[in-house]
Structures are given as structure tokens and as C-alpha cells.
Length: 432
Length: 187
Image 1: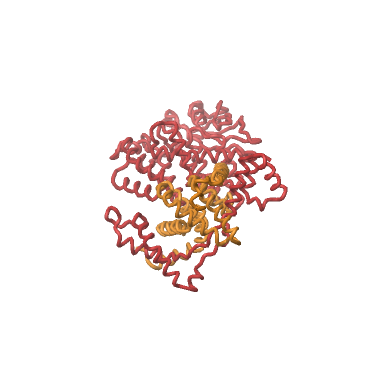
Image 2: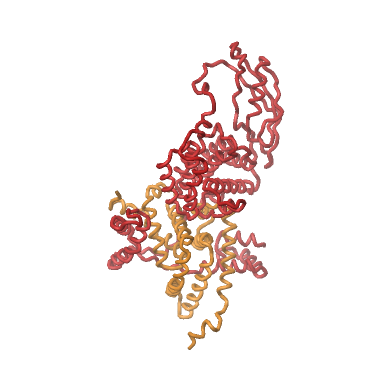
């Protein structure tokens, strides 16, 4: 037995509940390993530590007392702030009163006593151990890691990005740590419509082209070649469109492999141009560059104090600061997107998953089809976070939908991302 | 504007979880008054966000998460105050450990162990305290993931590190007191 096995055993259940053989092995190991001996002692001491019975607490009265006190005690800036410093003062001031009333209640007091009964267990389903929540309340480490490489303090935007990227990396590591990544078929993540050749359009010419190519282990298209076409005019746009496609590679024995001889037929038929298709330029890019009150630097500078709130785990403070910023300034769509992502991060930390998902989608959607140059995976990562939130809630179909949107938007998805997709498919989700 | 009806409804929602919250709070704070304060903070915070609590798939996990947030926040915000109140809290620990012990010797021993544990506990980071408190309360890894949001791998690693660190600290706090420290009492 080694130290890892001892730690694993202690993680699962108290020493006294382990089997006799396992317990003997652990104790034998601990005799010659100071670290494990100390860990065992700490474990035993913690388990033996007695927790007193909780004094009675009248929650309704506490709430009522706080409400009354909050309305009569001004906060530091002269206004009553529910849940703020005044509320804390109110709680301390009112605690004796709340408990005194109960103490006078005799039998009623006893009825309200909350015994030290064992915890009722929350659902510990089989998938629970693999679940994860990226916005962990204990995740000071990602922030510290993000701060180390640069001398300057990271901005809140970088902080959120680093924390979510770290969470996604942890999920990927989790996927790859499982006994063997699941095998899975290749399928298309992104198909790009070809450009209709202008000369063919002018002549009203319709047709098709059949292209054959290889899907690499990275999911890219390689060596596309035309097998047949109705007219050579359709061949160049067909090859261009094929090259831009993205696939989830085929996985065999836990490894991605190249798939050769994949064929795709592109049909060219004349249709009345849609209103959307006739628009010039890039809507997302135009929106991103729309004028706002704040330059990029000013926007980041305004977010600095909000980072303080996040670092203090004062999540209410984050929400208030962001709301204030949105109320005061006209923000560009890109800035709105970045705030939406921070909102998503905050809601996720608060455990408000639906609002977190909605905020992340607001952050990513405007730039999904037209990412801003030079932003890397910044606008793709929220999709992975959404996928992880759904996965954590056992909503595998929604998780797969979001994961595919991530893969479409990501610049360099890793193999673990594809393993995640395959696992979701194994759990019953289908590619739509 | 919240009403009395709101407060009563909220109380009915949260009361089944108060025992669990207090047990974890006591382990975190090592003091009954501080644990009470923490649980009350959780109640007030949860009341302000009761719509979220009502929607939570696991209210207990949600409440526990709020509690750990508040604990971590409080420790980081005001470590100085925590250090200043150490003496009072140690007395709380002594008095609380005794009632459950069988006889005078056991009471003395339980008090001594509680004091050692409290001393070592203070040296842990709030994150480590949070994980060890949940673990000591018997929460499974899956439940801890649900509550803390830390994925399995990092969770196990952090729990292991916390356990090892507590072991080291306990050993340091168990060192026999120096003669100078007890000479006044023997007089």
C-alpha cells in the first residue's frame, strides 16, 4: 500500500468503517510513513471531535428583527442596506432577544431544539464523483496562477477567463483520467456553405460537386479532391468550403485516428437571396466596434475594484458593482458581452445555474459566428462552461449542444474535448 | 417588501437544514457563539436570495455553499479579529468538549484534545478548514463536489494536503508545555 491508496481509503470512509485487512494495511504503512501517520491522527481526531447541540434559533423572528432593525439603523452612507453592515449590526444586537424569547418558552423551547442527528445524505448518484462545478468557491488557486506570470495584477476579465479555463482543463484532465476514453465515431461539427460562383449565378447555372477528403486526428480536413462535378466552375468553392469544415475525429481504442475517403456532396441551386444573406460586412464585428462611453482601458480600469469583490468572495458586491456600471455607462456590445460573462461567473458561484447559463450564452452568442480577431478562445470558453454546468446537472443533451458550440468556436480544441463529447453521447445525448 | 408570511415560509424551508449547518459551522469556527453567528448570517443571506434557495436542486448543498462562502469571506476579511478572540473561543471549546465525556479524566483529556485541535485548526487556511469540516461531518466526495464546486481530482488533492497539514500542526501543538508556561499555575 502506498500514500495515495491510504489517502483514497481515508477519503471514502472513516478508518473504523474500513475492512479489517485494509485497515491493517493502512496502519502498517503508517508505521513507516510519517506523513500518513500524521494524516491518520488528524483524521481520527477530527472524527472524534464532538459537536455540541445547536442552541435553538427562531428564523422567522430573526428575519423579522433584522427587517425592523434595518429600517431604523442607517448604513454608513446614511441609507438602509438590507444584508449589509447594518444588518450585521442588527443581528448581533438582536441575537440575545431572539434567544431570550425562546429560552422562556419551556416545552416549546425543547420542541425547537435541533438535535445533532446525523446528516441526511444528499443524492450521491454514480455520476456525482465525476461531476464538477467550475466556479468553485475554493478556487483561489486559478487566480493565483493567473497572477504569477505577470507582474501586474490581472484584470477581472483575465481572472474570470483564467478561472473558467482552469475549470475546463480540470474537466479535460478528468475525462482523460478515466480508465479509457470512450471510442466514438467521427461526425461533423461545422460545415461551411460554399460561395456560389458569381459567373454561375449570373448564368443561372445550377449543379453540384462531390469532394473526398481525410479527417485528421485533430478533426481538420486534409487533402480534399474533387471526385466529380457537374461543372468545373463549382470545384474551387467546393474545395474551399470542405477545407473550412470541422469534425470530431474518430476514436478507436481511446485514440483519435485519421479517417480517409470521407465524401461530401455540395449542391448549388439558385434561390432568392435572403435578407440576412444580403447584408454586407460582419454584424458581430460591427457591433463590437460600436461606440460606447468607455475605451477598452477605461473599461478594464473600472472593473478593477470589482476584482477586489471577487477575491474577497463578496459576490453581492460584484453584482452591485456591475449593475452600477451598466446603469451609468453606455457600453459597447463587446463590453456587454464581457460583463455578461462576469455575471455568469458570479451566478455560477452563487449556485444560480439557470441565470449563469443565460448570462454565458449572452456573452458568447454575439460573436459565435464571427469571432473578434486576436481574442483566441475567449468567446468560445463560455460554451464549455455552459456545457459543464449542464453536465453537472445531468442534462447531457444540453451539455452536448453547448460542447459542440464550443468545438465550433474554439481555435484549438483538445482531444479531451472530443472525449467529453463522446462521453455525453454515451450518456444518451445525440448530435442535433 | 417582505412580509411576515414570507419569513414564516422561509423559516419552514430552512429549518430542516439548520442542524447540519450548525454542525459544519461549529467545526469551522470551533466556537458555539461564532457558529451561531455564522448560521444566522447564512439565514439572512439565504433569505435575501430565497428565490434561488427555492429553485435549488439541493437546498442543503446550496446553503452549505453559502455558509462556506461566508466563512471564507469572514476569515479573509478579518483575520485580526479572529486572532484577538482566540482566547475566548478556546474556553468555548473546553466547555463544549466536556459535557459529552464520561468522567473527570475523560473530560480533562477531551478538553485537552479540543484545545490542541482548536490551536491547530486556527493555522489552516479557510479553504482547508472548509474541506476538512465537510469531510469530518461525513459528506461524501460527490457531495463535497456539489457543495464546493471543486472537481474530483483537485478536491482529493486538496483534502489530502489539508489532512497532512492538520496532522503536522497537531503534532506541533501536542508538544509538552514548557516549564515557564505552567510555573504560574503550580503555585
